[in-house]
Amino acid sequence: MSLPARISDGLVALTPKQANIYCWGFQPEARFRDAVCGRRFGKTFLGKAEMRRAAKLAAAWNVSVEDEIWYAAPTQKQARRVFWRRLKQAIPKSWLATKPNETDMLITLKSGHLLRCVGLENYDDLRGSGLFFILVDEWADCKYAAWEEVIRPMLSTCTYTLPSGEVRKGGHALRIGTPKGFNHCYDTFQDGKPGHEPDHRSWLYTSLDGGNVPPEEIEAARRKMDPRTFRQEYEASFENYQGVVYYTFNREANRTSETIKRGEALHIGMDFNVMKMAAVVHVIRDDLPLALSEFSEVRDTPEMIEKIKLRFPDHSIAIYPDASGQNTSSKSASESDLSLLKKAGFTVVVDSTNPAVKDRVNAMCAMFANTYGEHRYLVNVDQCPKYTQCLERQIYTDKGEPDKKAGYDHLVDAPGYFIAKRYPIKTRTGGTRRIGGLA
Image (tube, rainbow, N blue to C red; front, top):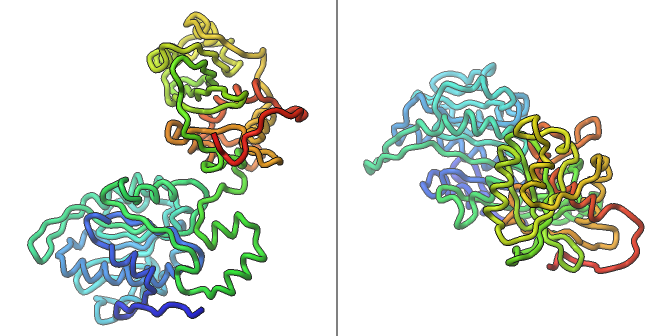
């Protein structure tokens, strides 16, 4: 099998898949582009073409010289190693006002526009200018806060006029890289799907699609690598991180479209935290749990009670809470959270102490998937999007404990109390199985 012929933009040659991403650039309906690609797809070739074009358009469209053009990598060291030399190759010497600034990785054009290579590890230091275009490389490894707090506002200030007289507002971005779990790279990739964000567009291409890696090399990698790593690195598949706490959860295998039926008994796992109370609502069918609704970022126990009663007025409700709620209240120290739940008419199912974290995690993982290939705990991922996100993103710290700093803990702790109570790890004695994620 021969590799596909390249399409040339002048100095830079692109394969058809690379060219497809390129051709959507600087269009209002694709202002923000996300390209999720396997290794050796040819991101560097595409990046050179993108930066070269941005420099040309900045001059042709009278973009202010205050609005710069950037290549960004997770770190400054990576930006220098991966792209600085390539950027200098992509820009013709006849366009340059001066020699490239090697220290700052800065190119000044005769038009007055500036091209930079930057690292995003110290993103606060990048504030100041506006942005006409940014290429973010290895997007999955970058800090999302750099985009949210610095880059996105810098793109918002850019205004320019096309030769036709049309005035456009807002700079453009291409975020590209290989996936690394279900993090912000997954979220922005979803934004670009049809019917989602109107000014986003996204693509997913494998290493083979890029046209740079022969099929026999792909097969050699497949033989030597574990399946999950191969899928992630060569097939651009979103896979759970090594080190994810709930590693057996898979949003497709554990997906259900079932919803809560009228009058059905509800089983709610609940975690107490002021301003961050969380609860996941379950039903039990065929003696197995379905997670079908969620509450998050609730202020305190009285507000949680109010929200539950408003959403589920005609249901019997059992709460499986954090045992620490019997000592103090999320609202005040005068009355315990458990007392408030009981006064509200809920059945409270709780032991004197919480199960060990390891036991709770193991119980959850065993219900999501066990060694028999059974998926006994299903989640309506559309009705429980934050719970799903937390399952995919909570990781272990370097001390071997579930991380509680990233904010993914409350919505997995809550159902854990329910699962550990109703479905603890014990010797298998038979019973109903649920295979392959079917409700």
